[in-house]
Amino acid sequence: MKIDKNQLGDINQKEITEHNERFDFLGCTLSKKGKDVNAIIKKLQDFQVAIPSWALGAGGTRFGRFGFQGEPSNLELKIDDVGLIHSLTQTAGAISLHIPWDVPTDYNAIKDIANSHGILFDAVNSNTFQDQKNVKESYKFGSLSNTSKAAREQAVAHNIEVIKIGDKLGSKSLTVWLADGSNFPGQTNFQSALQNTEDSLKDIYKTLPENWKMFIEYKPYEPNFYSTVIQDWGTSFMLANACGNKAYTLVDLGHHLPNTNIEQIVSTLMLKGKLGGFHFNDSKYGDDDLTVGSVKPYALFLIFNALVYGMENNPQNPYPAWMIDASHNIKDPLEDLIQSLEAIQEAHAKALLVDQKLLTEAQLNHDVVKCQEILQDAYRTDVRPLLEKARLNSGGALSPINTYRSLKVRENLIKERGANSVASGL
Ligand code: LRH
Ligand code: MN
Ligand code: MN
Image (cartoon, rainbow, N blue to C red):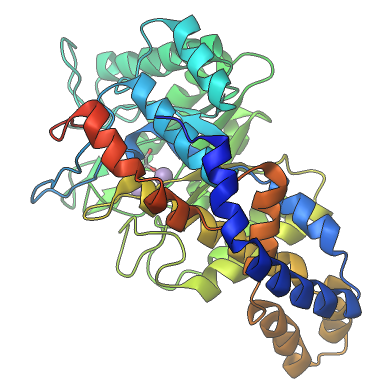
């Protein structure tokens, strides 16, 4: 199904008076504080977040998976689903494919579908954390880090293949996330595992097209529970530097040990021009992949404050590639993604409200109380009318979740695809 623009307009019309009241009040308050409300709205409209192809079905855990009816059973339908989310939110203008879960069969047809929804192809993701069908070498003991040369070569070849697939679609970056590590002390030699990984990454890097980037994602643990080869931002940063100026670190919010100061990591990477990609999610315990902003919205705001500062002050850092990397075990995946997008834009808008000039002044005066007041004044502002206005300006829905439900999107998808349709690739 496609969202009917007229129906969307009719639903917006019913809510417009209340929106105008809310917006006028906020706009007035912010203008009095010297904020350029239109410039903020424009930044919100421009901010686009990629949806990964694996997030469109219900996720699962090692204890099982509870499917969600009407899931997209092939890549074409997954792109349609991103199109639905984008029509409502105007913030999901890209899809990030996972290979080999979502290898296109007909490239032109896939590009046409994406085009019809205004969707671009963002970073392509390789997969060397599972053994694929008909492969000779196993990744049980690692991929790019494996002590077996043949296994490493197979993993390198897979990544090169992923770049070729992405290139045909118009992607401009490769994300490498490795599960490589060890489960027990003594199982591997840390130094040779790291050296092998560096050499393999360099082999992949050599084949990157001129205008491409390579993102190196880190994660402290899981699926390996004793050690992970690329365990933290420092290791990723070091590997990116070893590869060259087209290689960058990718920060995934869930890939940190509890209480890690992620905003500081973001600041350091942007200062050094090495923050390439960013994966949004939220967590309580580990890599929980929960809905963005559902548990720690203030932490998300502080991270966004660092991101906004970096985007405004660090020309040495490229514009990062944004993606949601979450799982939806019991929710409708599309509703969950809409909630995540809302939380992302909310934190973004609040960060845009931070008075950077005043904050610098307060920092230089060592006025710690004032520093906190400035941040919290921005955080405590209800910015939702700004998000509504941004969506309205771009042709989206004033209230995406309500509209999704009023238009009975899930019911229609179930009718079209059948109740038992299972997302491909999982
Ligand atoms: C690993 C991870 C990674 C994705 C993969 C599918 O935790 O979230 O970020 O590439 O799963
Ligand atoms: Mn990730
Ligand atoms: Mn993860």
